[in-house]
Amino acid sequence: MCGIAGIISTKGVGPAELKLMSQSLQHRGPDGYGFSLYSPEQGIRCWINRGVTEDVQCVNSVGFAHQRLSIVELSAGSLQPMVDESNRF
Picture 1 (cartoon, rainbow, N blue to C red):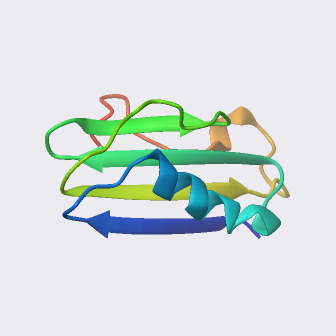
Picture 2: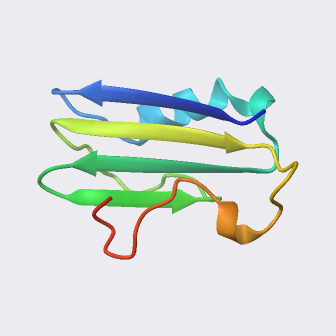
């Protein structure tokens, strides 16, 4: 089964927190991983199947880490995190 973790912080969320959350979920899905970081000031940033390397620290932010286990849907269309075309949601 896939794994997902999230964090909400008024002090800020950055790559270090997202990496730790993802590492704690590695046993839940070896087939892919992703991160998303949202702040009202900077919008949504997503990283799919690559490390979070940007030096970002977003105040008043929400972060997610996802580990994927491919069982039913094997296509790249199921990579997570998913965002809409505008990158707003």
